[in-house]
Amino acid sequence: MIKKINFLKGIKTLSKKESQNINGGISECRRNCMQDFADCREDGHRHCLNSLRVCTSSC
Image (cartoon, rainbow, N blue to C red):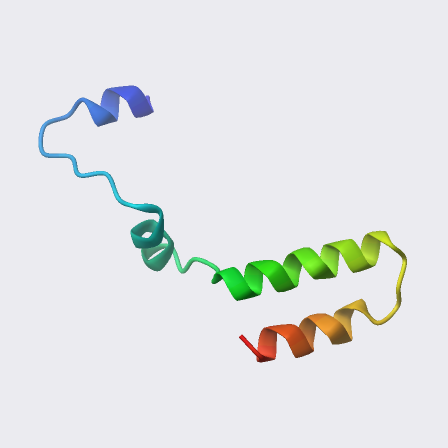
């Protein structure tokens, strides 16, 4: 279906940054915080949620 949409006349594809702005995309800082949170949880630490809150507040 996407291939069919791309062939339509007058369709402008958006850059990654443009689509993130439209879709309320996550900033790189917040994405890194979430990845650190996931890694922390996988390692079994208990401070992960607090660390996530501190990290996202600094973004």
